[in-house]
Image 1: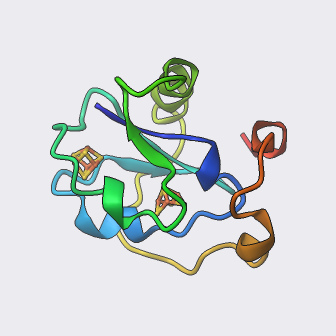
Image 2 (image 1 turned 180 degrees about the vertical axis):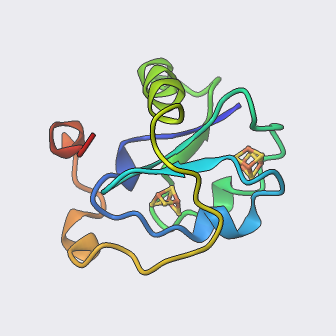
Length: 104
Ligand code: SF4
Ligand code: F3S
């Protein structure tokens, strides 16, 4: 499966949802996640994210993010269409330690 990681938090560009063939993205207030049981591992979303927030679950350090994606995909609503990024996306892009700012 592919996994949405820290880079998405407070940016939420949503370019990724446009290309997913199985519509397995779920949206919180300031992050998206991928449902690991629905993702077919096609990889087309990975290059679409402007901040490289989407990674395969085999990438280093992704394990805790996979757990988070699995948990939140069960509670957040499905998103199938692109929407505007969050207002402060430019200021947040590339910042570290954004997990503390995640809205659940
Ligand atoms: Fe969707 Fe493919 Fe990305 Fe999985 S890897 S979330 S199926 S676009
Ligand atoms: Fe997030 Fe990147 Fe998609 S910022 S919403 S994973 S395009």
